Image (cartoon, rainbow, N blue to C red; front, side, top):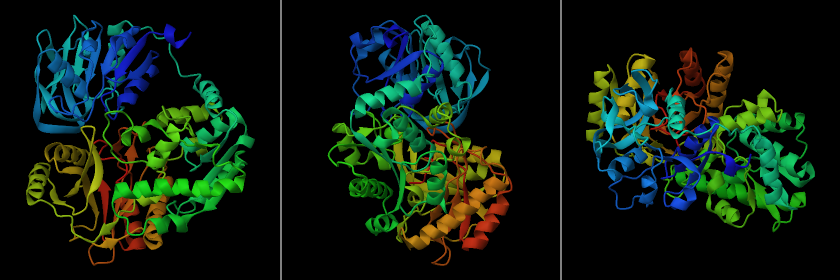
Length: 600
């Protein structure tokens, strides 16, 4: 059956972080789904059974909101608006949208008042995932408010006669447990046939690689993670090992023993076209004095390309006629502002300017660029890769460089009002609090934030910490993360110190990270969580020691994540304090959103 013969759902992409995740969920329910810009013409949707309007970082009242073809909303076919898409439907059909009294980020309890349409068959109270500032404050004629949360009176609305529904929350993310049921109900409303599967992805990908690459050779970055490894297999299969050069670069930001492990393990699994080089001095030299996280990522991405092109001649590659291979996933693209209206959350090393230039010239091949982490793992297993490679924790391309925060030593001033607002919310949950004079990257309402983290001090009650963390980031706009103090017993006085990316600081972080990985192995938790970044931050109690942050996470697709309490974490904290003489050790009790997985 050709694509044209499948019933189709179209996602109109308004720049939301989850637009492609929506499409992935629909395809997982065996209905073909494709993504179109909101400016598409009616003729582009001639085979469509339903339309989903994605979220986005804009406001329906913003002068620079993404333009869209309003005729698409009057086609008379079922529609589902999510978050910003919910607002568009409300405004288009005559309802009202306003800035909410409270923002909502992370988990919320949804009370279903009318279990109809897409909410049919759900429990009276469901957990859902929120990420929004604006809210619908009045429903259009013909619609009913069918669900609410404590902070959002119109968390869902619907016109069952026309098959049009709007949801303030995100059913497409894994942290809305009944999200797939909701999307499945929408497909039932659309009357869509279930005829699409992804079982043939590997074969289709091989054919697409051959067509794109032609008679050229491919020079592939190989980090050793699941993404680049699966891309390596697909490229080898598509055009033959003799036409693929795999290059693993030790950039100085690797984990303890990581490059040795990657080289040995891949060669043991038949990747004899892999080459490993140490370029750590080059990377460190280019990053002297660089503090800004966005600039740091851009420099690293550029140096990766410089090193690769410098090495090309060594492998007999014609610089003008080889293709750069990347294990890029869709989250990398979307967080880098890769769709027309998406906000730049952080520039991934595989989305710097030179990569965009090479893509425009047809000199990049990315076999996995429409997939998410869980899908890549599935493909890897289909291709016969062992679990030692397929199940590895994700590790960012820039490595520990984005987990080793830098500072000029200047105090990042904290507004006293923000500290007071945090204290008020924290007290309601039984915690003392502080706000740290550093900043980190977050994603709130589909937009990038760069804000101060709050700290909670008090009982180690994970459920209470989750509630407090969510409440603080929902109600205090200038905070995008909430930490919990693990050590020492009381909040120390911490001041920023001047700190740069040096081998000494990176070695300090490597030791703390190695202790963290060893703890996960000892507790048999390595396979139970998605990943656990360890972060070194230049906050000191004596002018020389620094602080450590632990961030264990549960996730399937990288687009959302929940913090994950790790057992016996006190043992790990003691080991880190003893080894590093750290000023403090914190636990990052923030979901994604509002905090990104990495701090930079």
